[in-house]
Image (cartoon, rainbow, N blue to C red):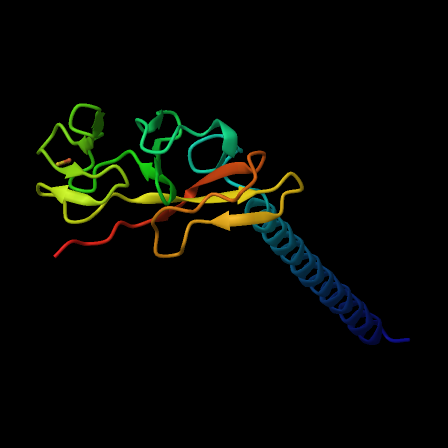
Length: 190
Ligand code: FES
């Protein structure tokens, strides 16, 4: 074999080896990006699979307890400051009213003397069931969805999609749950 032929074969072997290395590198890079993508998708799936709020904290589901524990019809509304709502027991059912005034976001209060909710900031007033009464607020109070379930967790009643009181089932052991992540916007007044 001539010297020139030997040198050509050497160059050819080197370029083959470079091509293999490049191919290996591209394969590795492709596998790495596939692995990264899989991890990312898996991470997002986990984030969305788990509830963002724990049961009992604001933003999650609050279990009130049995229907038998509710205040009497037209008694003072029950205040739940940590989960930011009032429960009013009207003669057609119960409502869970979000504690934030729909005018500019102040925390309104309840007046037993006047039997209405009153906002200290600009004087908006709301009825026992959250209906707008007077003042600069543009609408009735917002409310949370209430679900009432039996001892086995089967739903017996739920706040209507358009809001308003939910009628109580004839089962004193049924459990009242309030979903503070499901807000129904109050109705605008004329
Ligand atoms: S924030 Fe309640 S009346 Fe203005």
